[in-house]
Length: 143
Image (cartoon, rainbow, N blue to C red; front, top):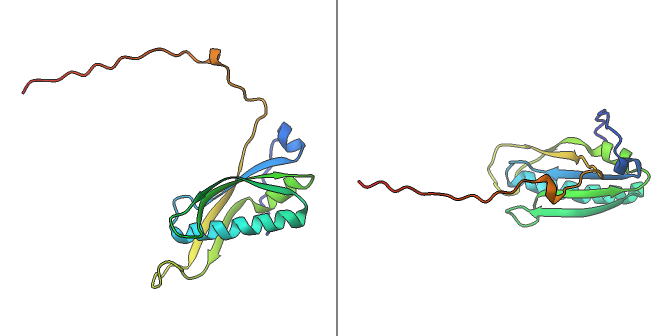
C-alpha cells in the first residue's frame, strides 16, 4: 500500500538505525472500523515481510467484536524501515457493507496510521520531581 504522505521527518537517533513505531487505530470509530484495523494490521505484517523489515506488535487492544482490533502499536526495524513506514502513514478508507449491522446504510469506514515519535534521550530521574504529601479536608455542613 502506498499513501505517498510527503511529510518531512526529523531524523532521530532511532530513525537513523532503522527503528520506527506506528499506531494503527480506529479512533472513536464503530465496530466496522475496528474490523478494518484488524485487516490492515494483517496486511502491514505481510508487507513488512515482503519489504524484508521486522515488524513486532508491541501492543494490541481488542475491539468489542470477535476478530477486531481497536488499536495496535507496531515496531518496524530494518534498512527499509523508514520507507516502509512512510508508505503506510495517513488515513485508510475501506468501502464496504457492515458485517456487524446488516441494514446499516454507511459504506465508508476510516482508520488512521500514525507514527509515534521516539526519543532515545528522554530520561526521568527522581530528582526531577518535587513530591509533596497532600491532605484533603472534607467539610460537612449541617442542614
